[in-house]
Image (cartoon, rainbow, N blue to C red; front, side, top):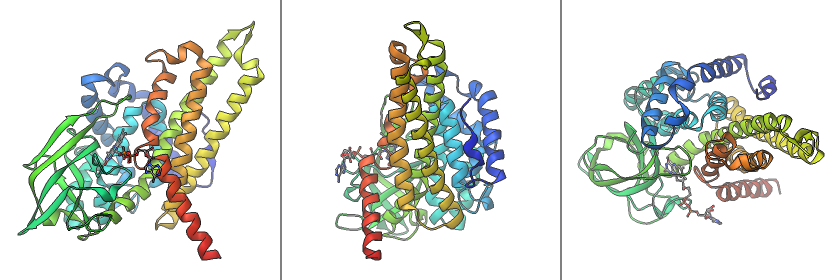
Length: 396
Ligand SMILES: Cc1cc2nc3c(=O)[nH]c(=O)nc-3n(C[C@H](O)[C@H](O)[C@H](O)COP(=O)(O)OP(=O)(O)OC[C@H]3O[C@@H](n4cnc5c(N)ncnc54)[C@H](O)[C@@H]3O)c2cc1C
């Protein structure tokens, strides 16, 4: 059982401890039936992901990402609960974390910028697990460089006509609706972008490809061909698209760190289970100081990650406003450190650590994408440095 002493930290209130206890109980009892190990790969993966969304919704856990007025927990997001959710589910099954997280990421622009009608239409269903959400910003030539996007939306009466393509879209083909970002004027860069909520059955929208990656993660590309979207589906104002995207990532980057933390905790658990059992040169691996040094480094990396994550989540929940610096620090540090922790766990497992299907081998594949999506580690460092420079200039 992973160390849960962090729940006593002052970042949490009793409702978070109750949420964590209930989700842990659900993950131990219901999750193995909803997400059996052998179904989390191949063609059955999409069905498992859909079932996970439904069951997490029914059990009430998706409420963490939904405003209280629409069936959720907090005024808009309960970032600490989302982080706890991702951490706990990540520790049990990567696909469960994926299903949980995407409901928030895919609907967050509606929560933050939607009209009352848009909120009423989508958010209650997302929270109940009855509608699957997705977030579509990346393109072949616009990943880190979001401002380079070329998907174009042109106003025609009371509709926008959208042409273009998106790639790396989580839940492509599974989603009931997408938050789609497009350029609404001439030029390049982050200006003149807009966000739209687009129903999956909108004529002109197609899933052009499915992309298989190294760990269970429904992913694909979208194509928009003369797709007509009511102007009323815009989220925020014309030209505010970049602001919408960054406001969403400001909430969810911290939670990516939390998922990584869950993977890292599981890796430490697996390492501990192994080193007391495995005997080399006549003694358990745990007796050797080189092993103890590894375990110490893993434990420090985990606690330091948790501190950054829950500092960021608490700041967002308690103070509101943007937490760009805190969120980028939490994501960059926790995802990079989880990679190191998991690598050490694989090393401690020896040859068994690279056998397909062994938990540390799964974690080794699961963690990799977290250092890439929602802004790579390098992009987070650029963001952090920009904030440090800003503070220095204001102080100096
Ligand atoms: C599993 C997965 C799920 C995803 N889900 C979604 C989703 O749901 N919705 C969505 O819209 N997108 C999604 N993405 C896309 C993801 O956000 C992008 O892959 C990511 O932003 C990086 O963009 P890129 O792949 O184009 O890499 P690039 O931008 O080409 O980056 C390549 C390398 O260059 C580095 N680099 C970039 N800029 C600089 C710089 N200025 N200085 C130095 N190095 C730099 C990067 O850090 C990286 O190491 C997902 C990606 C993955 C892998």
